[in-house]
Length: 202
Image (cartoon, rainbow, N blue to C red; front, side, top):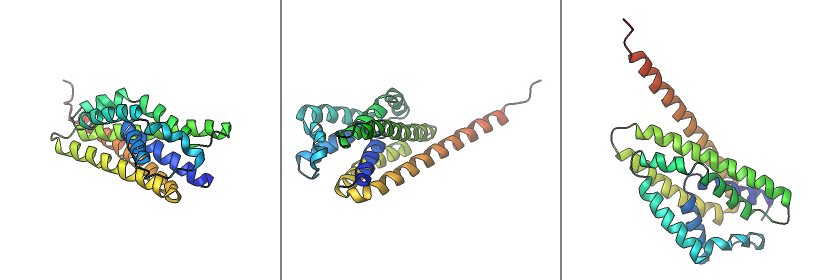
């Protein structure tokens, strides 16, 4: 496996951790226990994710996140709590994927992994805040369910097809940047309409 494939996997996993950290950990561990993910020798540090205790804790947290993420405004509170947790988790996952024999590359992976997870988290949280402004809960549940399915599917693609992992990471990054742009535009439009609706003084 070449360096570009490794970087692609690290980028994909880190970005997905910004959406669903616990689901990313549990799905990766489960796939490893089922031998669905054939990892090369230098990625064997990821074996810790297949530990029953790690998988159990990740599963409980993933279930809690699954329900919290589908309740209007509770999802935003959950995102706020995980503003620091997801980037650190994404950075550690990226660190585990990179070859430990190269400390310089590991430092870069740790920083980029944390940055990727933070960017994905910001896009998710911003978009969810806009969705929560909708008076009906259906859109919130639909968006959350799409994130669940996308996380599992993209994790599988990233590990099963490492040559495509880089493309997956780039598509995810572009999508996250687009989400942030849309959220900012909608928020500015909302506040702009609110200021125009205020009656003139006197």
